[in-house]
Amino acid sequence: MVVVMQKGAAPEARERVLTEVRALGFTPHVSEGESRTLIGAIGPAPTEEIREQLRALPGVETVVRITKPYKLASREFRHDDSTVRIRDVVTGAGRFTVAAGPCGVESREQLLAAAEIAHRHGAQVLRGGAFKPRTSPYAFQGLGVEGLELLAEARRVTGMPIVTEVTAPELVETVATTADMLQIGARNSQNYALLAEAGRSGKPVLFKRGLSTSIAEFLQAAEYVLSQGNPNVVLCERGIRTFETSTRFTLDIAAVPVLKELTHLPVWVDPSHAAGRRPLVPALALAAAAAGADGIIVEVHAHPEEAKSDAAQQLDDAEFGALMASLRQVAAAVGKPL
Ligand code: PEP
Ligand code: MN
Image 1 (spheres, helix red, strand yellow):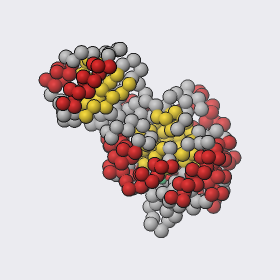
Image 2 (cartoon, helix red, strand yellow):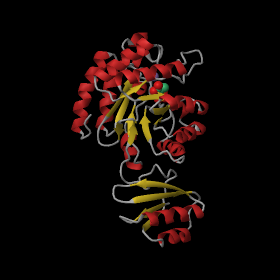
Image 3 (cartoon, protein in one colour):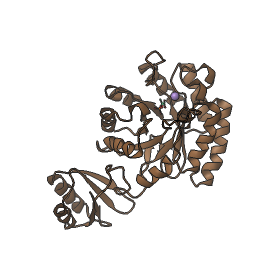
């Protein structure tokens, strides 16, 4: 349930509610809305008596039940869009965010070249996997800790904050020492131990939808991060598995407006892993902006044909430059300028 405080309710009233909520066996989560404070009380289904008891406290306007299985992620908990800060970049605040960079960190030269391209064309965040979750155990697995060090160097050079993937709970601490944002990939979409650990890290999380995860399952999984007291989650649609084989995955573009309806969390799209092929990436990226996404994460490589992973889908310098020019127009047209 959510306890909605009155406008301008005194801090003591709020403390009293927090105390009562805890005493009743619920965990409180405070959300500062534009004009009033909301206190989510997560726990067993509350009885009408409990809701009445909380409603009677000073400073409380009303108490509403959250009917959805996901609570903190739902629009019922928080009506206003939330924003997520990735160092000095704020996403979800009405401007379109672009995260760009290579699929994987392969070498110093490769990463710095891709970072320079991303930065020069106006991407705000640098992506690059140091720990790669590969379908085959024989494929390039990433440079690991060495990759993180290279990402830190690329951040020093460009000033861009870094989003990089964490693939296992025991790696969260290590990755979080360098990353400005932790990426949880599609293959880990139901790795609840990893999600909870990322929640405890306090770092913002870019959470990708699983290959065959429904939107309701996706939001409940995001709840594992939120329920650890980490509200900084960005959801990312990256394509789902369907019968269609002409693209790597089917980009569920409708997921963008559906998520916008159901949740206050920012929504990004990954056009690269959905498309799987370079020529299709720009159209999917523009569709994301047109559909109301708050940002994209896109793969860029100075020499895509030499990439150790996802060579077919990474954009080169000219292709990324052209995409950014079109994206500026579409994003501005839908009221979310870059
Ligand atoms: C990635 O972005 O590097 C990645 C592996 O994506 P996904 O988890 O969406 O497959
Ligand atoms: Mn990739």
